[in-house]
Length: 313
Image (cartoon, rainbow, N blue to C red):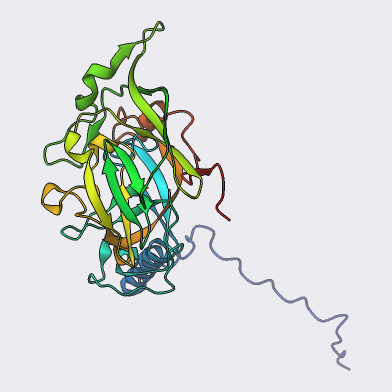
């Protein structure tokens, strides 16, 4: 009888033939080139720019000081922050002034004496920065360089000359032909015992009716702005002056001479200066590494709100 084949005595299965080791493995599939969504990238960039524009127009924006009109409290090269909401919003609030000039105001407010504000002159689109010295309804005159507000002289007291660094590489860009910012103060230049050159400028302290106080410079070089007949500030307007009284084209100066031409409407005021972020002395170059040595010490995060000695009840 033939023997039955069982699992125990069944012949073992032959192993599968091993692949030829000399055969190279199949090449990996070439990666697919990533397709850039240019429309999405452009949309994202546009949204980012709109967000920055919105923030600068509604909340706050950086500002650069290009002129000497607000010395000694603001120096050329100061970078500061201007808030947009203290007096409400208007066409001048919009960054780059993308809105047409108008007289409308949303959630309007009125500055206080001594506030530093940015304003857009009636004949230009660039921002100027000045101090509020008269409010709506006030009568203001200037007599021998002293403000007379509603018939009362605003107190001015002489202080020791302020010393400012000469900054030989600092050029003012607010003029048609850029020039060294302190060319007009050459006769105030002195050399200290340490060998450092400074400007010793005649300084006074002014105190407004609300107690706001700040320093001003009066060097007597422009007598045409030291006297002004009394004017009344209309409703919805303020009168602005620079702290460097004889070197400021402000509300005392006609528009034809690059001034503000009298009281300015609050609809042209674009915000309030809050604090200095940092300040450069003009020696910096395009190389960011040079900015460190150009930093002015002691100016970063300086508040620009005036100190108040007293408060009116």
